[in-house]
Image 1 (cartoon, one colour):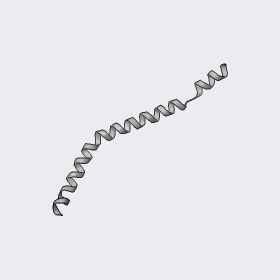
Image 2 (tube, rainbow, N blue to C red):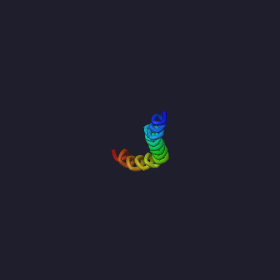
Image 3 (spheres, rainbow, N blue to C red):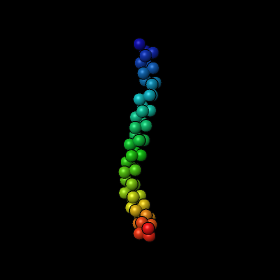
Image 4 (cartoon, helix red, strand yellow):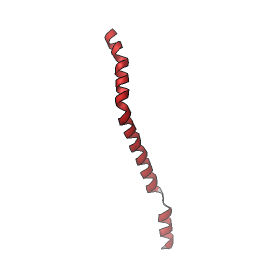
Length: 53
């Protein structure tokens, strides 16, 4: 019984999955925050090109 409890305490699979989920969530939030600015920059870059065509 003691060995199975020790094995359970050493198992880090769940912690790794949570870490990856937190990284994915942080990346998603960063993209949500930055995308409007990128969209405006791309639009400003392409507007003169569209007008020239």
